[in-house]
Image (tube, rainbow, N blue to C red; front, side, top):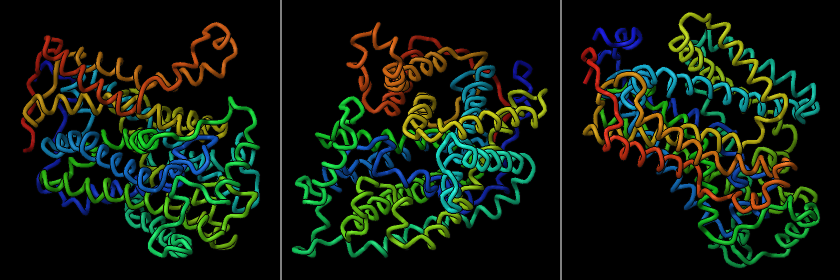
Length: 505
C-alpha cells in the first residue's frame, strides 16, 4: 500500500450498515435527472435550432418513440450498469474505482477532475433555462445576452454554488420530493391535450401529425417554415429515413445522460446488492426517460391535434412554451415558477459534486476559490447564451464521457465483472482510448463550428462534406473507448496493479 497515493490509501468503503435499498438511493437520485424539464422539453426538436418541420415526429410517432426507448436502454445497460456495479461492489466513489481504468495518478484527472469540471457546464445550463423561464413569468427580456436574463442566471448560479458548498444536506431532504413537480406538470398537460390525440374519422388512430402524409395544417407549417428559412444554408434538412430520427434521439438522450451514467458509481456505492443497482436503474433511468419523453411527445401532438397552437406559433414543439396555449397565462406562470424551483436542487448537487471533485484533485486549493472560479465560468456560459445551445452541450458531454463509460465497461468485463483495483501512474490503455474517443465524439461539432468561420470555409473547400461524418457521436465515442481499451490491454498497454486496502463486497 506504500505505493498508493494518499487519497487512495485513505479511501474507505461505505459500510454495509449504511447501505439502503434502491428506492431510497438510486431511483430518487436519477428521477431528479430524467424528470428535469430541460431534458424533456426539447425531446421533439432533438435540441436542433432551427428544427425541421415536425421535428422527430416528422416520420411518425412510432419511430421517434422507438428511438427514445433504444436511447433509454443504451443509457441503462451500457452507460450506467458498469459504474453502478463497481460502486456497489466496492462501496467507493467514481474517482477511486476509475483508477483501474486511468491509473492511480491519472484517476484524479479522469474521470475525477473532468466530472467536476463538467458539473459547472450543467450549472450553466440550469441557470440559463431557469432564468429564461422566470424572465418570461415577469415579462422581462428573456433573451441572452441581455441584462435581465443575465442577472437572474447569475443570481441562480451563485446561490446554487453556495448552497452546494455549505447546505447540501438540507437541499437533499427537500429535493427528494421536488421531482413530483414535473410529474404533475406533465400529467396536467397530458390531460388538457388528450382530446387532440384522436382523429375525427378514426377514433382508434392517433392524430395524423404522426403520419407521413401531412394534412393541410401540417403543410401550412412546412410552408411557413420554408418562408422563415429562405436561405437554404440555414435550413436543416428534413428527416428522410427512420434511422435519422432514431439517431438524433440517441444523440440527444445519451449525450444528456453520459455524465450521469458515470456518476452511477457515486450513487450506487450506497446500495446493497446487484438487484438494487439493476432495479434502481430501471425505475430511475429507463422508465422515467421513456415516460417523460413520451409524455412530452404526446403533449405536442395533442396540442396540435386539438387546434390549440395558433398559426403564428406553428413550428413550436416545446411543451413548456406551448403551456400558454394549453392552460393559459396564469397557470403557465405558476408552472414555470414550480419547474424552476424543482430545478434548484439539481444545480446544488452539481456544485456539490464539483466541490468534492476539486477537494480531492486540488486539496491545497480553498474550495471557495475553486468552486467560485467554476461558478464564474458557469455564469459566463449562461449569460452569453452558449449554455442554451443544448444540442452542442449534449454533444460535448457525450464526447467527454462516452469513451469514459466505454472504457470502464471494458475494464469491468475483462476483470470478470468486478473491480480489478488501481493501476500504477497513468494507465495508457485508458488515456489513449479516451483521447481517440473524444476526438471521434467531438468531430461533427468541431466541423460545424468551423463552418461558421469564413476563413475555414475558404481554405477547406470540402469541409461541409464532413459535417455529419461520425454517426451518433456519443455512442460512437463509447464504442471507440470500449474497443480501444480492450485492444490496448491485449497488447500490454496497461500499467501494473497496485495493492489496495480490502473493500466491501
